[in-house]
Length: 103
Image (cartoon, rainbow, N blue to C red; front, side, top):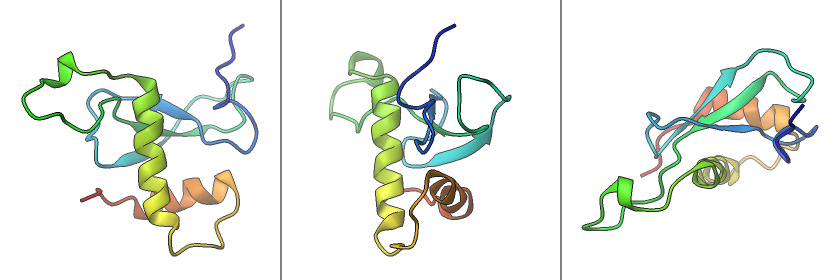
């Protein structure tokens, strides 16, 4: 049995890679219950970084680490005025309600 750390740990937002997701936003999705995860809700995000002028996405670095970075950026932008958000569940609730595209 394989666990994916740290995303499977209690109090941590799990992130899944979605190549078709717009890079400027994230979505909270429901997953099947699993002993490998502390929550059935995870964040779905693009695995592409910011574009480099003249370099196609397929030639740039990409992957789950960029999906985590994109999630972190969207969440950080939402948390600026939300000091009361203190838990992963509360952050998932916030992302579910208000995750606008970044400009």
